Image (cartoon, rainbow over all chains, first blue to last red; front, side, top):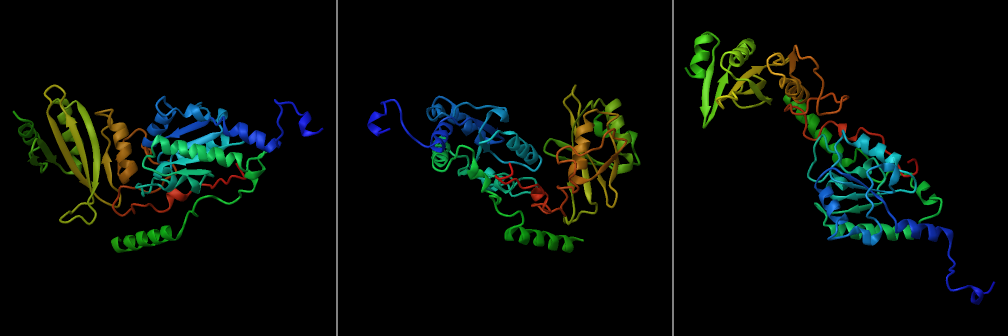
Length: 191
Length: 164
């Protein structure tokens, strides 16, 4: 069939591109909001900033109905198993945004109880910096994620299977080892 | 008769020490007499509310002779009087009597002190950790516990994108 025979309302594309286009424009976020970043996340969804313009306004509080997890706020060690469980409960295909300094790196909370970046334990697609990031910044992040989905998304999600390495730093990076050694030296001094 | 006078009359040999900072009136007492003193304050002096229990670790503190200070804040809801009762316990086995029988609010407050400092409360009905996870083994507010922990915050399985 020659191109001139194709009617006006028919277009040709690859199935991957069509599926990615549909997915990128109907992201349903799961708001994992634990701190002040959650307030900015709510503002992003509200009428002033209106996340609905980008097809991502349907906040669902059940992980089974979501395909975009937005980790907004610090995650403590008691919360991390919950976060991982919610992540595993989300159906494929799914993406994850780590929003704000605390979710990305632990932020100023460098203490025994706060996880130093969720990317150490769950896969993260996109980091939004800021403390907390403004709604515009989160929206820029979501648009960037849409771009990422459109350029490289596949119908059956084979691009995910290649990501076998953890995203974040290894649990005991050099800094961490130095800190542990210092802590032990202090202990020896005390006892 | 003021609360201080009443306590001095009732416990002449308990070695009570009174002090005041602005409107905070404080009573220091040995751990052995603590239960009697608090029971007397509740039943006879009308301190019907236990507002707070907390502790201080005096490890390496200048001039300190005891390891832990435990602080009880009691309130008389009729007169609005408040007293801060302080006592001391020491390693290796810091134990105090539980105040659960006097004030039910001691339940979670004592659990919190146990969780953070490892001070046990004998007679507590359910002395478990309250804030940190159950499998946590340290007492994080002790001064010999490092601020950044001993790696507990990294002790989780790593989920990669391929296996989730």
